[in-house]
Amino acid sequence: MQIVAIIPARYESSRFPGKPLAEIEGKSMIQRVYEQVSQLRTLTEVVVATDDERIRDHVVQAGGKALMTSSAHRSGTERCAEAVEKLGFYPDIVVNVQGDEPFIEPVHLEQVISCFDIPDTQIATLVKKIDTAETLHNPNIPKVVFDQQYRARYFSRSIIPYLRDVHQGYWLQHHTFYKHIGIYAYRTQVLLQIVQLPAGQLETAEKLEQLRWLEHGYGIQLAVTEHENMAVDTPEDLEALLLQIRKRS
Image 1 (tube, helix red, strand yellow):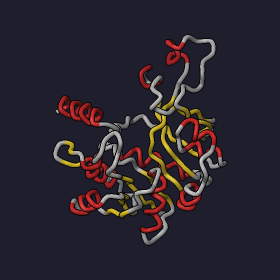
Image 2 (tube, rainbow, N blue to C red):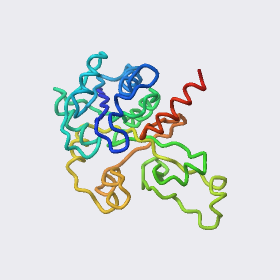
Image 3 (cartoon, rainbow, N blue to C red):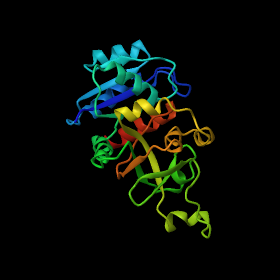
């Protein structure tokens, strides 16, 4: 089975311009992501998909592989789809790795890929148990509910499910809630299909692209991880991450 990891990376970000090239303890963020992902030997190839020559040149100079893609893409999923078309071959599975998680665990990749041991898996992603009230009430951290076969039923910025007869201060003591960790994997033919779908009402309301896929009838298989992710969305996030690193050293 051929499995390709694609790391979408764009330079222009409203919250953090130039984020992929931000330095973290002597290495750029994108280089750290690339090196972490490359630890997984079951991958056929690891590629950065970018719309900026500075990022492409930096990755190549660091010994990696990068492809130029359009600046018009609205999501990492769309960028991955274009990159697949430029690979020169069609892999069985494409893993979409966030370019702002410099310490992503290879086990995250292993877990999301393992979802395809289930023959009818179309799309896969990860969830993690929510441990703090801060995370539970943060609308920037999507929550997810799923069935007994770990197939996603809904993602929301709101807290789901709502515990009707319990005061919100005690919800974590009465129910196990899960947050979404934004690493995706797709069968290649499914990836090329979902980027052609129009946005639906659910995605428009919540601003979560995975709701488009659910609304159009695609299945999303979940794996539960116990490993935390550390995404960097803003310069403040980066400062907090650097502070954690210094405390550990």
